[in-house]
Image 1 (cartoon, helix red, strand yellow):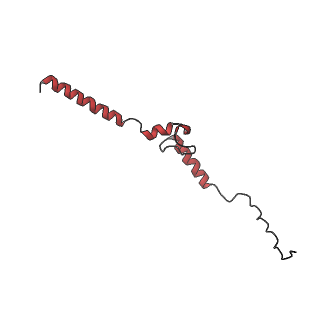
Image 2 (cartoon, one colour):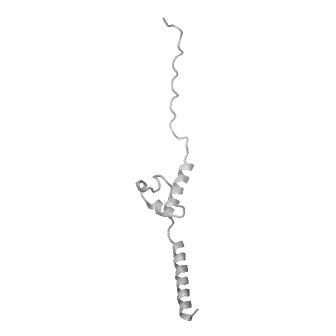
Image 3 (cartoon, rainbow, N blue to C red):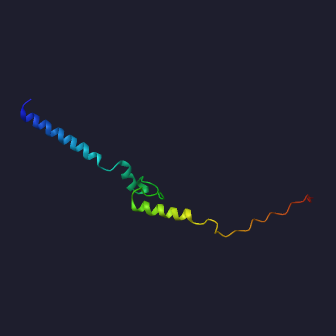
Length: 91
């Protein structure tokens, strides 16, 4: 091979490697879908935020407060009254 052909081949190889590495740094298909609205096929409402975001930290803190809250401070309701037993007085 001649010297200019080697330079062109090396440059093309370097460019191909650079393009492949830059594709690795992009967003994944799942991240694109997560940003779509639900009517376009994105994640449904009520899905927790992604770990590592400030919203996730606030969400986990809220879940911790809810878990630590006393569950027995709800008012007690009277049990339903049972119907009187039916007698065999039919004609």
